Image (cartoon, rainbow, N blue to C red; front, top):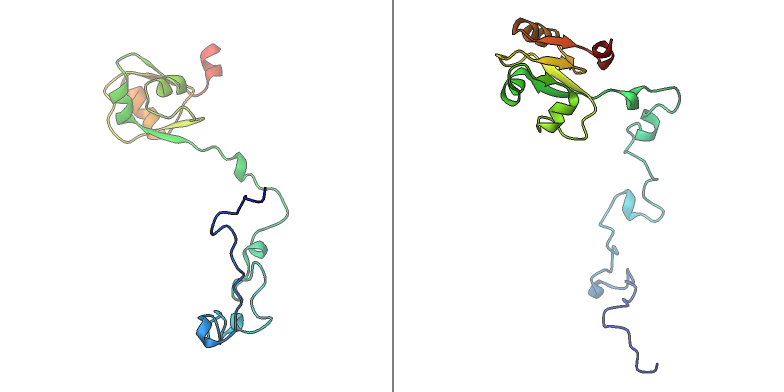
Length: 152
């Protein structure tokens, strides 16, 4: 036991400030020259933003927010459908994930009307913009908003 030693540099001496100019941390003691933080007892409290209304006071602390229940859609263009699907195929969330058009973690998809569609596709359970719906139907495809419509 008497031979066990701490590795060198394991403990460090406390830096004592204000003990003369020659120490390198004398005179102002590493606090700078003037200002609020150089004074004894100086400094600001936690959350202080220089007189600006602090964040914890800007944020509402009561009431209900629907934000965390917001549906976030992954957007897919008509040109992507044209690229990944063949004539007469069905487009659903499962097939979009299967083909690698959207990520596996995707919960909701919305088809946007950008691009051209030259194939007749059946879209099931996927949201779409008005122009996208028109384009899908005019290309000879069909559109069903929910899975419940398909079963009925």
